[in-house]
Image 1 (cartoon, one colour):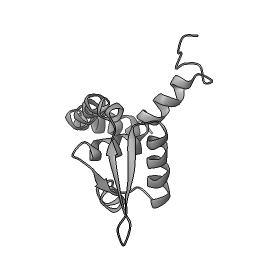
Image 2 (cartoon, helix red, strand yellow; image 1 turned 120 degrees about the horizontal axis):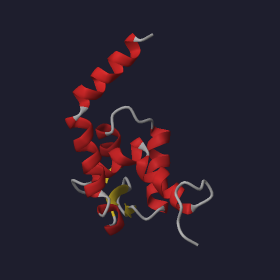
Image 3 (cartoon, helix red, strand yellow; image 1 turned 30 degrees about the vertical axis):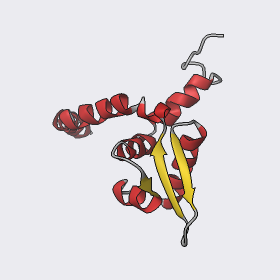
Image 4 (tube, rainbow, N blue to C red; image 1 turned 30 degrees about the horizontal axis):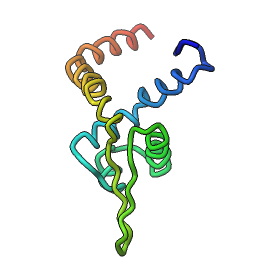
Length: 118
């Protein structure tokens, strides 16, 4: 069977949902700079709730994009890092980030024109 992301029952749709989610993109971009602790991720990804960050990290870990390493220390230390699979996403998500920042003014102008139509 061929993967078909347009079919809601196809696993490829779930993969696109994961990597296209705004929180997942921001977490992957944050981890591009190296391993981070939960608090560092929460601080960098401004606006994400604790619940949403936990769900996002679990989903990324489940999909093999992120690893979670618990260090035997007091208090316990947990680090998150990109896997090789996760690093293979960096060009894509960096491209999305670049597009968003490059075209921000144009998008904001289009929104203003649309909203002015009332």
